[in-house]
Length: 235
Image 1 (cartoon, one colour):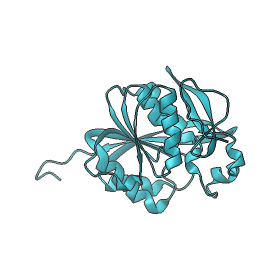
Image 2 (cartoon, rainbow, N blue to C red):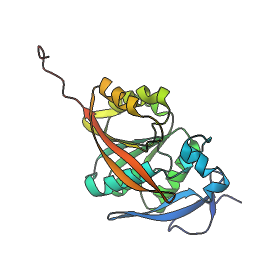
Image 3 (cartoon, rainbow, N blue to C red):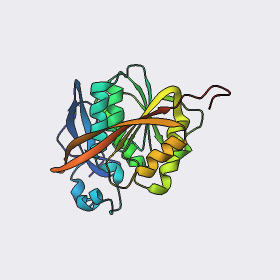
């Protein structure tokens, strides 16, 4: 199929983005309505059951994870984002970041998979939104970059990278910033929360129950922020 650049209103007609069959799907979170571009007929590309179990090879970026939906819903209902500088790491299809952009935030989307960013680009264009797209491992971002809000939706699935993830969140938070982490319980993430504490971040969490592929699912949404430094001589 010849590639066609999506533009204007979304269509149910299949097109191609980065060589993948693509379709835009309407989504709504509170007052924010978007047309989100995703891979059409994903089951033809990967075994979804295996993907949900975590024992299939990606494309992880192509699946609209429950954590991304839960985080998008939280952003739409419980945050004020106009003028806020936001970073979404491991963005995949970029749903939380797109919701933040629709709410008036200045969003930087980061993913190591270039096709993912092409889908994000299509979503931004279709909805008349803007954002900065960066194809990189989130660990390699410039150390000087600081954001009021850092989003991480279901990026914690490799235990050997938990410390890197915690360090990245701590490094890129503005002094009064916060991170929002969506954890879909697909692996034992308890070491991640210990790593966040080790990097000087305080946390609080809530659990969201939702449906995934017609089955009950849980998502933990965790807010993380810098712990206040003790004054000199204080222990």
